[in-house]
Image (cartoon, rainbow, N blue to C red; front, side, top):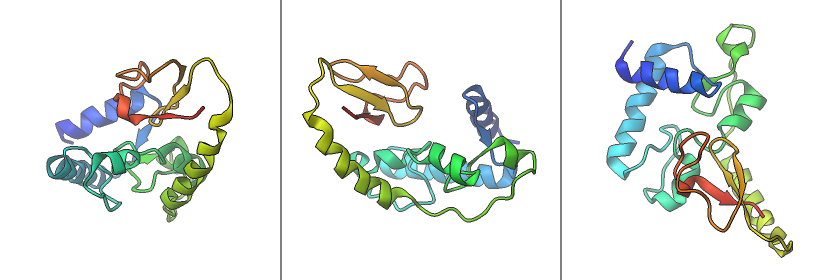
Length: 156
């Protein structure tokens, strides 16, 4: 196993996530994330078509915004880099995973309608780990997962 694999595995497990047990497959995904890092300046998911503009692809930066929902619904994220404990232990089979991105982008249009609620501070959510904060601006770095400010979304 390579150094990059070991580092990613350690980081994932630190936050309660598991990597796909197929080490060769995971190393291939890591390499392709690095290709996207070099190509675009950010590590977009290699299993989706990136626009090449960070502001349009924030939801696709690994770990993508859809990872947790996919893990709950299917036992793995869309590219199968991350899996649940049940999959890791062989108690659940991997199946094909539909891409929920289009549906989620439609939902975001509906969330904008909720801006009429009068709060003292806006509420921001880290799209990587779900951390919530009520303040004028999101933090520069998420105190939970260390994601950058650009990975936060205003939810209220």
